[in-house]
Picture 1 (cartoon, rainbow, N blue to C red):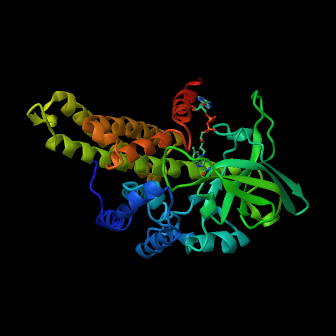
Picture 2 (picture 1 turned 30 degrees about the vertical axis):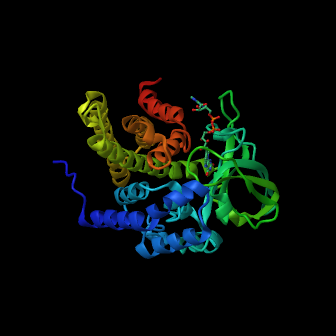
Picture 3 (picture 1 turned 60 degrees about the vertical axis):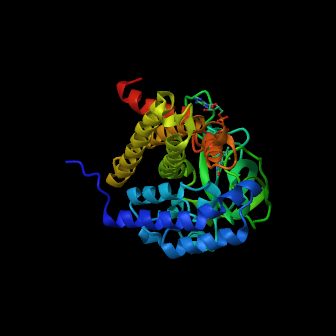
Length: 388
Ligand SMILES: Cc1cc2nc3c(=O)[nH]c(=O)nc-3n(C[C@H](O)[C@H](O)[C@H](O)COP(=O)(O)OP(=O)(O)OC[C@H]3O[C@@H](n4cnc5c(N)ncnc54)[C@H](O)[C@@H]3O)c2cc1C
């Protein structure tokens, strides 16, 4: 028998997070959208509230000092936070799960202050010449005695200007392989933005997620003590993969939340708005897309929670997380576009949240692995066992 009931603890997490989002975040949405800036005092206040509510670091295991929640519970929280704009939701920061791999002095210098909300992390993988093809990265880490010397540039790094440090992925050698492309050996390092030779530069303005900056990072002969290496030399890719699954599920959760929010606006509008002497919801041209969207949103919810449940069962595969990210992000693109169509001209006006949801949706099919890369992961999992 399959039980779709949430536990009372999970329902409480939903109610708590939803109240936080509705009362303390959504009222600031409009200002953030119009100014493109998240006021630092507001960000600080929301982070403090998130700590008080037990949301901050809820995703990290208890044995390293996190909230130790199961993946289904974390996904339900991410979905609630996803109802508002990313800039606001990110104030209730959930540090990257890969920080659980911190060891020795890394714990005191990076993990512990991050769990307490005193330091903020970000992740630096992408480069101008290496997006989907991470192993093509040019940023290099060269060993010099007990130290490492880092040189290179990263771009599109979210929130770097409001962070204190990054987990940096750099090439520390090359692997022997038969592939035509050079496969770099990737290592992960904890780089403090106060380290000599690190520059955090302004990034690009983009269509999605106002108030959520991205930055360019430059590393010019940055000297790191040996203990800043995370895990083994060359094991950076395993760390990336540990991070990517839950991160892709977070993207999927926020996509479902935004689709639900857009849908509620469109459904209510169709039930109220009159043209040709009747409610527009009575025209099949309007009501049938509403039916189709309801089906897609329900499917997305099922896929989302089933994937989270598989993480908790220890049976999840990269293809499972890729499916959730692919379907939910593409579903949001279709839904946000159709919801605007349902509303008509008012749908593209800044007076409604619809235009923001539609703009924000664009990036979800690109970051944390494009839709094409998700299809590659899914199809590889299906075909490889057949020898293809
Ligand atoms: C606003 C923003 C914030 C971001 N934040 C971060 C961050 O915090 N940290 C970080 O490290 N990165 C970050 N990223 C980077 C993001 O993950 C990359 O943009 C993404 O992985 C795609 O890389 P790319 O943009 O270089 O595109 P490319 O890899 O150049 O892809 C271009 C096109 O080619 C297609 N393509 C490439 N390879 C294949 C293939 N093998 N098969 C089929 N199609 C293929 C892609 O699907 C895409 O359509 C961010 C990006 C943006 C836009």
